[in-house]
Length: 466
Image (cartoon, helix red, strand yellow):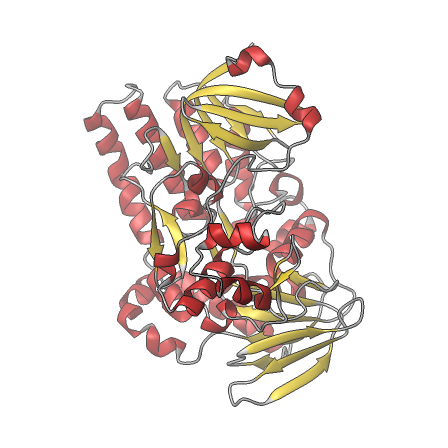
């Protein structure tokens, strides 16, 4: 028998949990599905288990605060199904998911996508070698099992996350061989127009300065203005090569290299639903077009959290609460006047939480080099295609991303373009001397996650109305 809910929330991070709590408070029936085994999302991953442990202490108060929200979420009465993957959403709305080898379709009046963000794909020569990970992946290991590399790690990248992770790593007893800071030079000059907001958000700025002080106290070597990185080795990472701002190349032995070039909204599902998106020129990424309640261009489909634009955990919580009010209003549980009145303090709070964002965007813009990797760099890991392969295919007529997908299979692997999409679009734009926003992005088709024939066969035919 098909299950029906007032709302299905995809994702149990800060935004998803907050949205579920808010909608349950209005008496709506809510199903929350999430790929992880426990609530928390990436930023609060494993928080219920880790918050009371020494690991929780070294991860900081902001991390441990997620346990409070997770407790409220557990008690709110929403149906929660972890380790569940959504592989298709169809108008209606019908949400197809799989769990434990079984597939199911549920019906929802409203769908809330709380999918968060992903690390910006930034391919460089050797990034597929064993021993090369992203900072986010290393932080997951630290949060879930307190795994600390036994050898000193190199960190290449920029932004708040590398700073936070390096501070946490040092607290956990790890060591850092060096930090290759890839932030474009002149960052503080770029932030001058937003200096007033920075002063108003001095508490958040102070956190970053405190992390920097921890690195200085530990004697971490920082190489500023790095413009290129290459991982070298036979069978695994053995050396790194990097280019300094003065153009000089340096080499150093390495066993672990962690890279990070910022985060971007997760847009895979909104693209699959053909929701309208806009191009963020400053951060070179797509974000969904949303109304004041987080609703997309598709009625009754909402986006909450960093999937709506990067803002951090606290902003994600507020966005989830606003989406909950919007769903309640559109469901008739709240009058428009009531919803507007309840949203007013939330909007004020959100504005304050996002006040620092322009400064961070100016301080850490994506480097143009990450979108123009050398020809020998693998850019599509699933199909093992290099930047040179893509450039050759781009010379055949004037293909867009979807035509190039047909030529090369780029974007047709298990990640479906999550890791190569932006790089492919930038390479095409450069070859065709066009703007990336003109070139466009992959068309995303179901299934959104790998699906076996056995799982597909487990769907009840009556559920599909065929």
